[in-house]
Length: 181
Image (tube, rainbow, N blue to C red):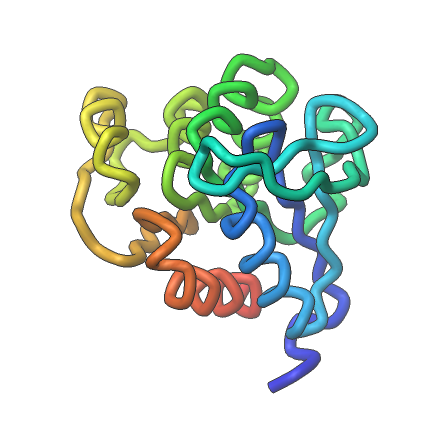
């Protein structure tokens, strides 16, 4: 039903190297339901998205720097993947503060593919069941998560998926989680 997310604001935390489809598809799904999305990043200007981590794709305009972003301005957070994107984000103190703020307040957080690396660095995976791209699973276990190989998992407000092939169920779950936030 269109408009079920009207009035909801969702931050999409991404940096250079973000996997384009993992940014675009959740954003489209949320906006189709009436949510307002904002691209939050490390620097003002634009970020460079990628296709398959190696081919430059489109550039996307940043709406707000994470250093200026306030968790209470949003209802939920989405962290797309791409291997380079979360590597940039997890080295930024403000990005980690931002992610922890959503989890601490019980607001929905969703991460796909390599996005859960950000959750590991923010120290919010301990005791949660998560899924991710296969190469991250040891990192998740070492950080205290229970790791499963499923299309989409939601545990204690944190939703994760494995790869772009899971985007249909990931997007559906993200919309549902934001509806019930």
